[in-house]
Amino acid sequence: MHKIACHECDLVHDIPPMPERAAARCVRCGSILFRSRKNSIDRTLAWTLAGLVLYGIAVSYPFLTMKSGSIAQQTSLLSGVEQLYNQKNVALATLVLLTVVLLPLIQLLSLVYIFIPLKFNLRGRFAIPVFRLLGQIRPWSMMEIYMLGILVSIVKLAKMATIVPGLAVIAFSLLIFVLTFALSAVDHHMVWERLEKDL
Image (cartoon, rainbow, N blue to C red; front, side):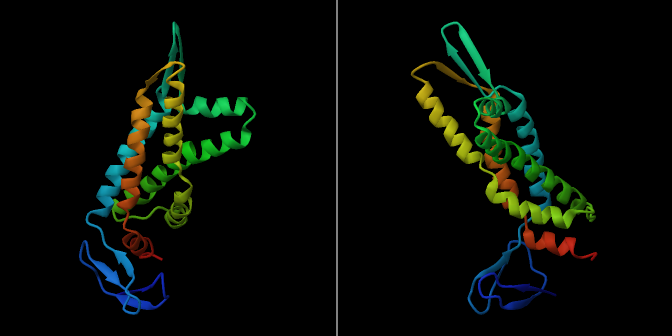
């Protein structure tokens, strides 16, 4: 038996052990306190490891190749940031680097750091602050917006040159979904319960 406060009305509840895929509701306002997820640790780790592979491909391989006659120019995820910096768009380059390159990597590494020890009934030394950080940076990951900008650019540049999507575009597109699935597989209630068990 443990206590949890309603996120809507702050009523504190005593919650007994819950079966998988069950949901607890507030007795006062009816809001969902939490939902337990089946095989949360295994599913989160599976999506996260797949995400790390896709991330490695996305930052290592060519993103787009622009061909105009006999001239071909390749771009990568990191070279796009570099070009923005070279064009004196330092703020935009920093924003893209943080939201598209660094934050997704931090999210993936944070999930690995938290869930691999949990898989073996252990707890990383800094698991609690890392899990808090994971919740704080989630809204700042903007891969979807970046991908939308790439698609708009492809449509506009298609009249001037032939655009050939690279392997990194496919990996980056899949990474958006895989990271979303990894984060949605996290059972926050279970994680906090396991992390606080040894406190």
